[in-house]
Image (cartoon, rainbow, N blue to C red; front, side, top):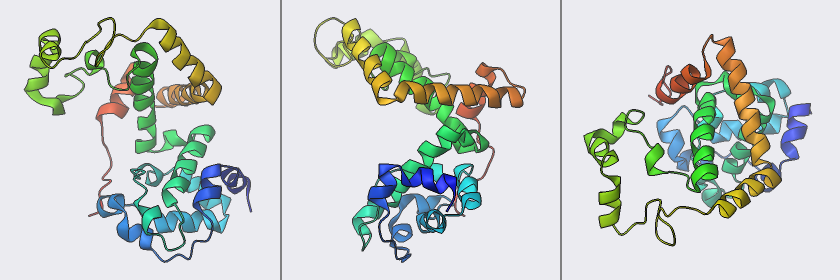
Length: 231
């Protein structure tokens, strides 16, 4: 038994999600991610159960743990009611805490997600906020979104939304006191500390790659260098 395994078993998601695996492979058979990615939840659980720190460390630095969509189909079909998806959550959490996530392409994308989603929540009260969803960063949205960016008030007005308005309604302006409460929730639950860990490790990785923070953000947000598909 090693230190990484010990830390994993302290996570309630491992305690709840890995009780009596019989290595049958049902989780892999039902897993949507396994159909498309080089991903096998059965093997991941097997590595965790081996208690081998060297292998667990490789897992924490790998692309593999970032392929899971956390749909929990694995738990619904497991004959022993294990939940490999919960084990993946614990592995991701430990990977971030240890700073290992920056060693994989998919792991590094946590920086972009953290910067965009957490900023939107804390600044506007929404995970996705129209004015920060820039078409230049999302070419997949197409020409229609480029046009919509210039006509937000008209479009959302016609849809009955209250974009940045006072009072009630979809996309209304969230009062400052509510945003302050969200920040307190982040602080108390450890989310603020988690964002700091992600940002600090990402800055170090950017420096290691000879990139500015902005260049690093663009790289992890836009570039896919590896073949992640199961072909």
